Amino acid sequence: EAEMATRTAPLFAALLAGVSVGAVLPSVRLSNGVDMPLMALGTGGYDNDTAEDAVQKAMSMGLTHVHTAYDYYNLQGVGRGVMRSGDRSNVFVTAMTSPCIHPAAPPQRNVSDPEACYNLTKKELSEALDSLGVGYVDLFLLHGPSEPFGYTGGCDEKVCALNQAQWRAYQDFLHANFTRAIGVSNYCQSCLSCIANDPSTVVKPMVNQVQWHVGMGPDPEGLMSFCKENNIVVQAYSPLAGGEVVSDKLCASVGQKYNKTAAEVGLRWVVQQPIGPPALVVKTDSVKYLEQDLGVFGWTLSSDDMKLLDQATEPKGQQDGHPSWGCRR
Image (cartoon, rainbow, N blue to C red; front, side, top):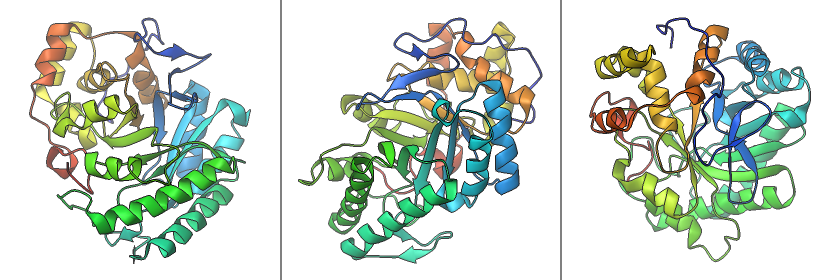
C-alpha cells in the first residue's frame, strides 16, 4: 500500500446493510453470536518489535482487530501491543496454528498420524495463547488443510482425518473457554465438508480466511457461495493481491470517479460483496494508510462499477488467483 495517496478518510459515514456498528469498527456476527470486527491488521512478516509498534498504531486509529499466527513468530510482540493499547476486552485477537502436514516453511513437519496431529495441535494452541499473553484469543484459525503448499486437489480420506483431528483440538480449546470462536483458513469445499461430516463435530467453522481480491471474481471456484450457504464468514487475505491492486489500471480508472486510489477501490470491492458481508485483513504500519484503509466503510461503489470490477481477470495475486494454497474444490 506504499503507493497510496494521502487523504483524510470519512470514518463509517455510510455502512453496509447488515453490518453492526460498535463504538469504533463495523463488525459481523459469527454463527455463535460473537461479533468480529470486519477489518483486521495483518502482521505476517513482522518481527516482534515491528508487530508491537504496528498494533499500537492500529489501536490508536480505531482498528481494534489484530491478526497473527504461530508461524509468524511475532506472537509476543503482538501480545505486548495489545496489552499496552488499553482495555483487552476492546481488542479482537485472531491467531492461527499450522497444519500437521507443513513442509514448505517453518514449523516444518509431516505428522500423518491423526492422534499425534491432535496432540500437536493442542500443544500449539496452548503455546500460541501463552506467547501472546493476552488471557484468551477471540478467534483461532487453522492456517490451512494438511496438504503441501500448492496442492491442487481436494481433501482425500487421509488428509480429512488429519483435518478432523485438528478440529477436535480446536473444539476442545473452545469448550475450555480459551477462545471465543474457531474457524479455518485456505479451506476449500471438500475440506470444509470433511469437518462438517465428522460425527465428533459439534461446532462448525465460523470463519474461512482465503485469498480474495479484484481479478478473482465475486465467487471464485464457488467457494464464497458455499461459505454463505453454510453460515461461514469469509475473511479475505491479500485483498490488494500482494500490492498488485495498488497499480491496477482498472481500479485506478474507477477510483477517479470517487477521488479514491486504486487500493481504496480494491478494498471497497471486497467489503461490498453481497455474500456476508465479508471481512478482510490489511497490512500496514503507517498511520496515513491505516486511515485510508479504515475509510473503506465510508463510501460505496455504484452497481455498474461493481459489475465492471467483478468481471476483471487481473491481477492474479498469489496461487495464480486461487483462493487457497492448500486445496481446490
